Structures are given as structure tokens and as C-alpha cells.
Amino acid sequence: QVQLQESGPGLVKPSETVSLTCTVSGGSISSHYWTWIRQPPGKGLEWIAYVYYSGSTNYSPSLQSRVTISLDTSKNQFSLKLTSVTAADTAVYYCASADYFDRDSYHLLYFQHWGRGTLVTVSS
Amino acid sequence: QSVLTQPPSASGTPGQGVTISCSGSSSNIGSNAVNWYQQFPGTAPKLLIYTDHQRPSGVPDRFSGSKSGTSASLAITGLQSADEADYYCASWDASLNGPVFGGGTKLTVL
Image 1 (cartoon, each protein chain N blue to C red):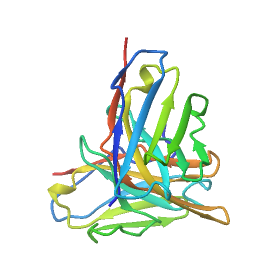
Image 2: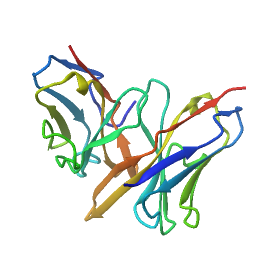
Image 3: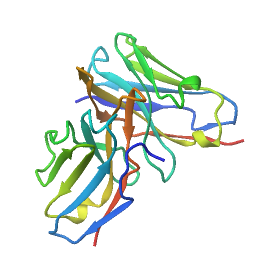
Image 4: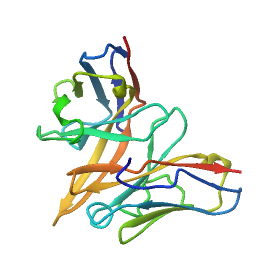
């Protein structure tokens, strides 16, 4: 059973950069798509980005200019970097594994295993 | 404003059935798979339904998914108090080239 654990700073000042790491255990990072999803307090889920073990990436258009996702297969970890944060970036950040299939413009992507989430608060 | 539209709330009494709707468009639900997630307060979401109607191992058959055109539904039969949670639909959106979620539906078991 794949398990994921997020780690991060908790509190970040406006305009700074927040870096989050997800450690994967119970499975190889050399498979699946590795994803970050966030949830502002009391609100819904928002997909941020995913990275495949090959290194290919995909970003949410609304966050693409401020986000970088990367993979460290030697440590079985993947990471998220979000720049120029504001109060609107305050959220619980989840890492998750995704299975993805596409053929003839039909896409199936679902998030099977999730971390417990880490709260990132942006405040001075 | 979420790309997929869900009712903010739904309710039912123990033993009854309830259906949660998810409305989208031809660029998402109309041409791609739909998944559903269940989330209890303070915990991470859990995959409930994938590929429109498939249940992961361990999900009771009281939960079922369906899709027609650009809309999808999650049906729960034999409601239990333990089913009180938030439910999210999700699909791939071809215009955004990525996954999108509904705004979530809070299910209350009266």
C-alpha cells in the first residue's frame, strides 16, 4: 500500500516562496503520476500540478506561472515550489498518487492514494 | 466558481437513498471519465468511484456512479450516519488540459 507524507514550513510570509515535499513509501516512485492538490479552509479541492516519473509535468493554468513540481527518485520524494504567495494561497496542501490513461482524446485520471495534508498559512 | 457544478448540500434519512449530481460540459464530463471522492472533516479525500462507475476495492456497493451526456451522478443507497461527508466529482477538462473538481456536496444524514 502506497503511503504519502507531506512536509512543509506551516507559516509563510506574503511574497515569499513556499516549498513542500512529499515522501512516498510502500511503493516505487518510478510509476504513477505524482500530484499536488490544495484545499483552502472551508472550500473545495483544486488541482495544482502533476509529474510523471519520466520527468514530464503538467500545471494548472491558473497557477502555472508560480509553480514548479519536481521529482527525486533517489529519495522517493517529489516537491512543490510556489512563489510570490499571498493570503489566497492559504490552504491544506495534499500530495497524491494518480493513475492516468488517455487514448483517442479520452482521458482518465484519478487520485488513488493521498497524504494527510499539510496546512500552509500565508501571513505576516 | 468550479468548472463542474454540484449542489452545495444534500440530505436523507437513515436507510433512504440519495443522489448527488455533477454537471459539466462537452470538454470534461461529456468526453472523459468521471471520478468521485469522499471527504470527512479534517481528513484527506478518498477515491470512491472511478471511470464513471467503477468502485475501488473496499468501497461498499451502496455507492454507485453513472454518467449521461455532460452530467454524472453518485447514488448512495441504505444511507448510514457514517456516510455524512463531503462528496466531490472530478473529471479531465480538455480545454484546461488537466483535472477539474466540482465544488463539493455536503451530505447530511438526518
